[in-house]
Amino acid sequence: MRSKELAVTRQLCLAIVLSLVGSGLAQQSPPAEHSSHAASHAAPSADEVWNSLMSGNGRFVAGKPQTHALVALRHQLASGQSPKAIVLACSDSRVGPELIFDQSLGDLFVVRTAGNVADAVALGSIEYAVDHLHSPLLIVLGHQACGAVSAACSGEKMPSSNLDAIVERINPAVNQAKTYAKGNDLIESAVKENVHQSAKDVLANSEIIRTAVKSGKLSVIQAEYELDSGKVVRLNSPASSQN
Ligand SMILES: [Zn+2]
Image (tube, rainbow, N blue to C red; front, side, top):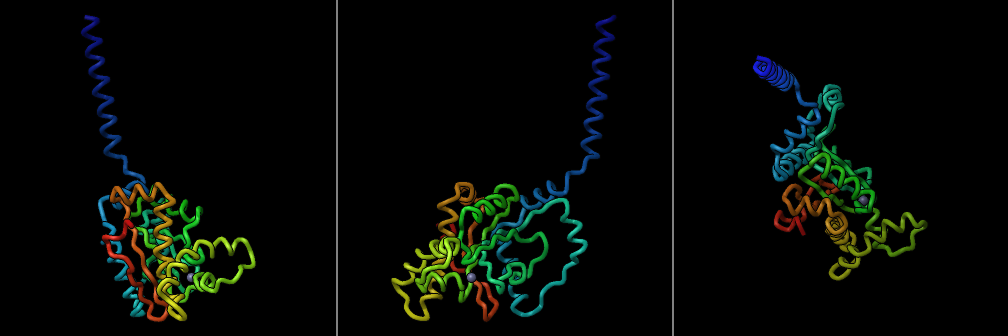
């Protein structure tokens, strides 16, 4: 009898535990950050993100930006972020990524350095967004008439080692541009070469980013912002985004 009672008790306990677990799971809503991550995994793809950013840039060029319910958005985002893209851009005050892509709070994970150079701190910041926030797209964004690139083109000695650190990273791009461009064309060509250089540095110096690209989790798009037209122009084809 005792062993029978014990078996019944065990079954009852198991039933109670299962029912508790079941009801607990049913009532438990996922944390906001987790649920937003799940949404980002499901979609959108890097191409879809790029297309939506291009639509935003079109609105910016046309002077017809979207209005955003910033207070509601701020509250919604307080529990977590899931930015759709990472942008490595120049610190230039005329090149604010949220403005030129007509995006809002929580949309872009932005890393800005003069000359959009990818130093260790910039790389670490991008790695965080790739590894923890799972953004599917990295845009390396240069711009017309970049002061940092112009400084590197001038060949002048910089007044500090910190400024030198920026110019040294841009110099390979300038040297490349000098093989085919001169005079007024040099800076513009060097700007484009510097975008290529930064994109190359990102992959060469970060195993996390390299692995994400190889596994198809991250695409890298190179682009240039035109100060006069307001347009963002893609510099690389999708096929060469991993190079
Ligand atoms: Zn610049």
